[in-house]
Length: 113
Length: 113
Image (cartoon, rainbow over all chains, first blue to last red; front, side, top):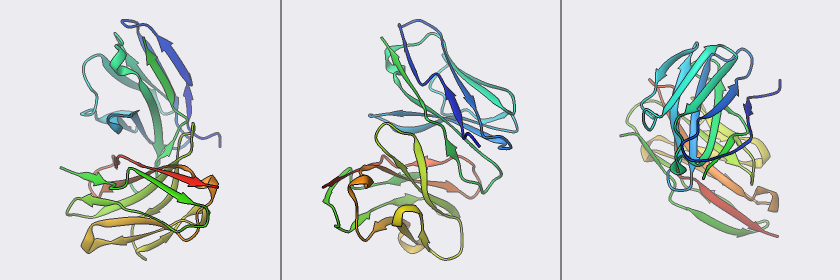
């Protein structure tokens, strides 16, 4: 299996622009998680989906952030408009079942100028 | 609130030294416990996990961790570290009723050759 796939790996954009991050979970996994990693706040869970349905989005910072999972093999995290404080590494992870381990993707390093 | 404490922010050791990284969690119920490792420039990888059974868990690359329920601890150990163990180590837990991981702030391990 190719593991969790994320794109792009690096994104540099200007403040105010829309940013879309993409994730393809491991085939067969039914839970998907978006995390953000910064020096100041460490790893934070933003949102997670189970069977394509958002279960808990309490970690989403504000309305500028939105996430979708239109099918079992694809999810997006969108920031509109982006701000410099959104600069971070965004990780996607997937798992199968309640007791399964989460497997992380390589992350997207976002820089907002 | 659920939280994970990693008291050592940065640990510097010489090769062949023994390692113990502390991890304490705050939650009164059943937990699943994890240690993840993040090598420089790479994504999070699972080192080991505890769900139930033997509280002494062995993971990859010679790492082990012991779950001590009375102390709410899950310390990571390795008898003899190598230069290639230089990385950031994250302790995480998942409460019995939820699917999301709560991560500690991480411990940066530097092993000197």
